[in-house]
Image (cartoon, rainbow, N blue to C red; front, side, top):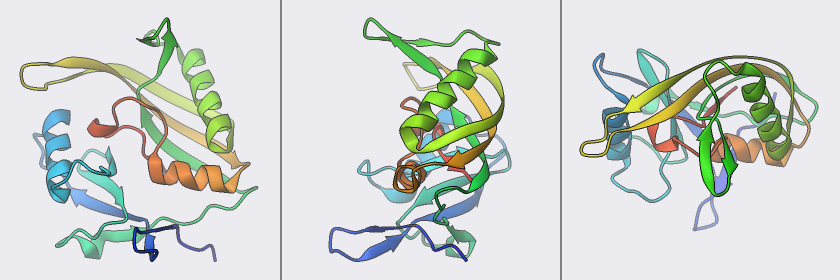
Length: 186
């Protein structure tokens, strides 16, 4: 049986990485969801990863959440050589001249390549991948903006256990994490 993913706290004690499943109110846009998750921790320091799953959200953290502990599931350690199915919501872009340019809508080949590059960086090889994408508007008061939202389902092979387990802790992709992007669901 595989172990559970842990990290050392500032006191040197190991803290288990946990996924909490929390019911999501029906009418909650991405910005309000971001505020709700941030409010669970009362801190901008070390914000948790989370993912919107429709009726609920998954929040990944080493911190205990009072009132929802019964829903906590330890994140397993994934071993080198294992083949797993993952889900990932990401905002796919390329950098050009210091600017971030979202991939063109419907360009699934560029999105597959984006995931392959992220896989090489995070210790996994993409064996098969499917994705759907759309542009979403984040209704931040006074400053609404647009993000690419690409939902991947992929079969991957773990090539570098430490890199992959780190990706489970810190996420994949650089944009939109505060709005539920970047969490690898295994």
